[in-house]
Image (cartoon, rainbow, N blue to C red; front, side):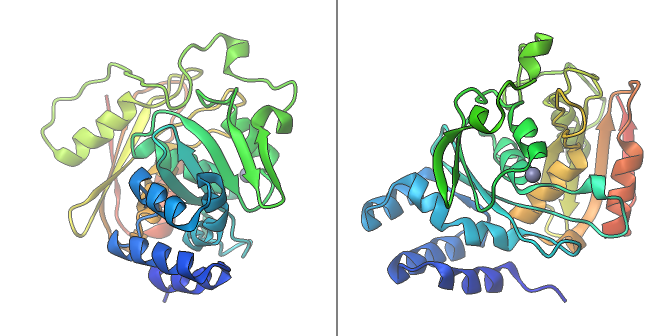
Length: 298
Ligand SMILES: [Zn+2]
């Protein structure tokens, strides 16, 4: 039996020295049913009341973000918080999966960034993480449309640009790619279906960032309460740090405080190309649930 996210957060709040700030954070998260997201007005309220900057608040919130981690392999919980150009905060945490391969893992920075993307954020200005970003994540972040000015904050080192962590970087600009991760994409895919879950998966395939392979694909996961969580494919110039749509959708579901056991339906829409993520998606889904993947080619 897994511990409810509310219990984990309640425990993590004790790590915040400012008891009044911890109480206010608890009330806000409780009110929004423990979704790992803070809207800009809530952040402004907390910062004004407690006389702290958004960056300081994001560092205080890292133990809360780490509560969303799933770490049956490493038992090492990483929390990340992305600040969007909208001033909203998006939580992220590392996700590990048993009974499948280690390549299916989602790192905390990938988790927070893809979470922001799925909630419609257009650009990321800052990311706070409780441990130094690994090389894989530095390369993943270099795909962002804001990579040139992205600021990284760690508990022991603040206000450092991504390119200080990734000097002489290889990125989309080396391959003359015009649209970057989080830019608006329209991959011009279509299907003849009125099914809302299929339509959502198609919309996700249409906004996938896959300029290198063109293996556009999207995922929609429906839960018992009829909610649909979606995911788009985030490809990377260096290929291996790419994040498949199944990971993005599962991460969105988990960061929304939902349990994977509540998935009742899973749809994947993919454009046939030299690559396919079908097998990887089926494998990951099959490691978590008995729900069978509905696979649709455009
Ligand atoms: Zn990493």
